[in-house]
Amino acid sequence: MDEELKREIRKMSLQNAFEHEGKTQDKIILGKILGTKAELRTKVKEISPEISEIVSSVNKLTIDEQKKEIEEKFPEILIPKEKIEEREGLPELHNAEHGKVITRFPPEPNGYPHIGHAKAAIINSEYARMYGGKFILRMDDTNPEAERMEYHAAIKVGLEWLGIKFDIVKNTSDDMEIFYEKGIELINSGKAYICTCKRDDISKHRRERKACKCSMGNIEKNTKNWQKMNEKFKPGEAIVRFRGDMKADNAVMRDPVLFRIIEEKHYTLGEKYRIWPSYDMAVAIEDSIDGVTHAFRSKEFELRKELINAILDALKMRKPHQGFFSRLEFKGMPISKRIIKPLIEKGKVSWYDDPRLPTLEALRRRGIKPEAIKKFILSLGLTKANTLAPFDALESFNRKFVDATSIRLFMVSNPKNLTVNNLPLSSVEIPNHPIKDMGKRKIDVDGDFLISGDDAQTIKQGIQIRLLGLGNVLIKKDGAELEGEYVSDGDMTDIPKIQWVPQKTAHEIKMIVPKTLFNGDNFNEDSLEELDVYTEPHYLQLKEGEEIQFVRYGYCRKDSQNQAIFTHK
Image (cartoon, rainbow, N blue to C red; front, top):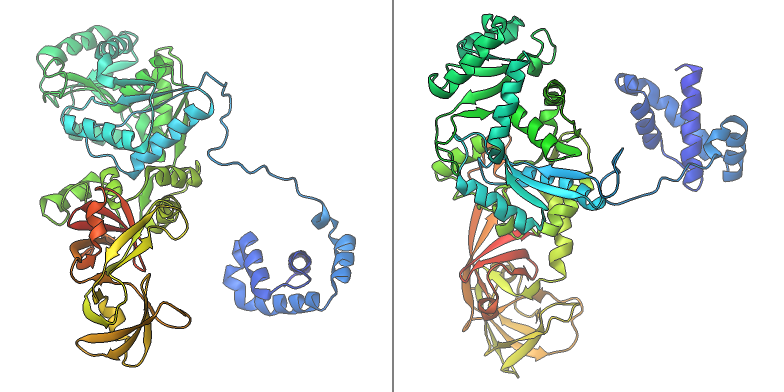
């Protein structure tokens, strides 16, 4: 080990020891040095003994001796670090004026909204709110082959559930005449041309970075072919291409498509149009004419930034600032329609509200609160690093919202009978929440109870148990039929605490327990568990959709009178 590396290790050891009451650990210092010098990761066995020796010598020094050595050899350690102001939410925008920021969320209505849509909508909404600006919902509906009113409606319902407010709501297809006007302008200026090559040939030319013969056509020919696209050409026979750069390293710039022919019926416009703009053409024009100042979208669109700017430069139109963030998915919960749709068709998943899915409908049905989704997404910031989050990261935020408002109820699974003799009361009142004043509920009792099978296995003759909220019971008989005698409502120390439901009024429900949908690339056939459980009759008085914490089990959402869905622990 060279002297420079030894000096660096000595410095790290002194700093860490000085900051932690005079002591450090060789494992900590090893981690720190490997974090700054990745090339040493192949030499761990060689440097570990040296690190241990240096750490040992530093730990033998008093704090005053450590400070003195730092002052003499590493004074920079003691220089106060500039305090970074901590702030919640997203980072500030550059070149943003309060009251003048305009953002947008342009979902394509070709599927049900999911957690990825929520991220895009929340980030753009939050920036508009932060700067007192405007937020636009713009349905990007220029592909009649894939889009449906069903999806359009589902997106609006999902956004409303998230609590997102819009200042302007519009459809991209509202501006079809403007797209045509701008398309003709590009053709007339020589910035675009009509290509009648076959699709395979176009792909081959783009891979080989070679221009096709169509790009040599003059403006007059392109104008006539534009007219033929309206009247004569069939889908796939002609497209409008932007005159980019066929030699570009960015493949997006190799004469991309601006318009194509689609003869499918549009869900609002019917058969009024047959030439439709591509995503790049539509988003460029719309962001400019809508006054969007900051356009944020997921990073798979980052390579398209150059093209969108080129289109707007060619048309001498205003360009928005474009920002990008990572896609958001949960481990084992794919958001791709390509994966989810076949699962529904094969009956492996019930529908888009199946609680195993990351769609907004599924998250709502599972019991995830929109406020938790917003907090979770804003906690991730604007990073472009891939975000494949564990679902329990969202659960931790959700728990804070549901805990304060969730009624507590008893619930037992795999039930066993317990008879309690000498019960001195015919009803009991139990608080609905251990801390908050959410009232009490009355439970009628007659000495016959159901308790959980797991609890029953631990009960032996001669021991005392505590029936929660009711009192102590001395077990007189164990085995298949449990029997006990009411002892008192006294000491609860060091005895099992057991939940229960009255046999006479116990209400049977089905508990749906969603689990990870995929293990790696493989569908998890055991991803949905169904349990037959019993709960208190008070369950019937709750509204559908209410969140419940079943004592010693977890948070669940009432799905119906006879079914609940497990949310999380």
